[in-house]
Image (cartoon, rainbow, N blue to C red):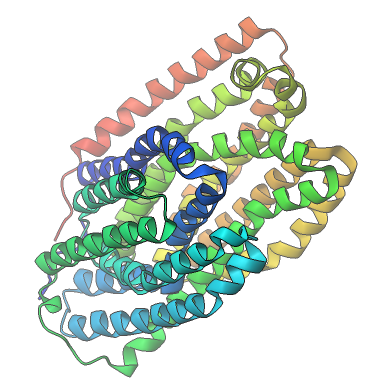
Length: 493
């Protein structure tokens, strides 16, 4: 039986976070080189469908209904309590549920492939049959993708982030270089999608072998048990609500701007938004590593839980403040150099609001992860559902009154309310972190005030000096924290 609980050592967490970040970012470099070549080889319409297929593969993880993350938490609980007697039944019950959900998704996509090609994607008549065939091949990959999320959940519970990252890097290569290689033979999307499916099958096999190495329960099947279904569905279901509602609130503003202000306004809004959103890769890498460790600390070491929560929040802030401050302070010049004078004129205020919102959002990641790791994903899901209607009303009003700057302001204000409420919920649910939450709530107005004052400075030299000062101050404050984390003795069982 598996018996190794996640380490709470700062050294281990830092190393895992770096591997997690590498696994997320390495495929982007390959995409940067491969995408222009694919556009040239396939043409705009075929490449447009390929982009949708890539997106579909990425979002198929929603079909696991949060069961991969639920499995991570429930495995960590058992490892922390040194009670793995029912681990095999739990894992195979989760696998059976994931397989059923994946099969349902596959059947649904097969049945609707023709309709999607004709009515939704409006493919040219000459490409309609090819598009339908490609979507049906894609459907075959849904069970593979969702089952892979369960295997990743097992590996994350055992903190095998380096192994996960290595497979993800290879998969990223196949995702872009595979289709590119096929274009030398044929531009047919069915063949390209088949290569993508082959890459997913290879990744599934690799993850299965890795998971079997840390979890002997995978070596033989166990009978699924009904008593494991409820905790899996409870956690995974509420997590899915968050995963569905969150992107709606993130991306709905673009559709709204397009309908109210026109597609040119979408470009002025979405382009800086996409660039700033890339900064979230760093906190995502850290939070992915933090989840199993916070779960273990919640079960077995509340003192370390408070310490981990406080240190991770502060270290993330110190890491992210310099790039966000640079984006905020140097937005006019950066937009001019990158995209031209029109973007400087139209998007500078948008960038200011988005930068402030991104740093506030950073402060909300830790309490959200804490609530989920403590077994209360329902609180975060209900909060996000409750925010939808007020946010849409605010978005409509501010966009109608102030254009894309108003849309950005609505997004930032929604993030502010969300972060404050998450902090309050975390403080009430896990009282061990109350003092850390209080410090964050006290510092939030100070941080916002500093950005407001910085936004009033017009002299570019002064803004450059302020950017440099933020970098120096954060580095000075960060180094002792990093050194402390790296000197921590392992808390691993």
